[in-house]
Length: 184
Image (cartoon, rainbow, N blue to C red; front, top):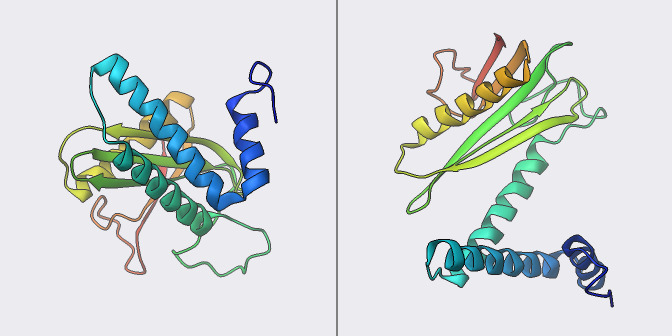
């Protein structure tokens, strides 16, 4: 086993994954994350959070991320025909940003985005929690705004934004979703 003084958490997590496999390591990571969040809530906010809820929430978030990642991953060996269910590259010289939001009762909204170049390489990602009570369409618009504000701070002048929200833009594509090319 690794020496505690010499090993990072990443080293331990990698070791657990090597020994136990991915499924068991997901549970280990969820429990470790829940312990850390619980510790911070107790020390910083004098709260007593529900550990089971934290672990299950993290596992759900991880599963959702894996599904999202599987759906948006891009391979140059894919067919030249694209459906809206799979990622396709932006025009040359552009950055493409996919944004999304999730509204969770009692949590608020989770906002996220991923920016990729024309080859499908991830350029940057962003996510944040927005406390409050939101309608899904508003949360989707907030996620797109969050992404576009970041693009503006980075100086990206040519951006394609894509969201699965049906009403965050008047340019709805009946085949599914919204696609825009923006000049910032």
